[in-house]
Image (cartoon, rainbow, N blue to C red):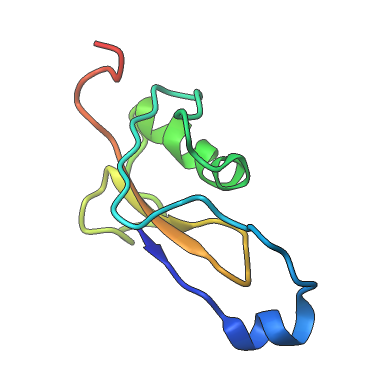
Length: 97
């Protein structure tokens, strides 16, 4: 996972806010299907969850060969000022098992 901050856009367009994101680089979360992992950003989950759900049900090869690993996707949250990128990968085992 990687965080980016577009300070020029924030200075120009965003109202000052004290706290925007709790996500940290190199965090690992495990989801079981549609359930948002504890501590995972709710807004980011809304963006990623359709892919997580699809991967958990066997989907692969999103966008015809986009990823080297067919059972993965590189996705970003919807914050245009400080986007966080996530590598989402299917696991072979059940998250609760």
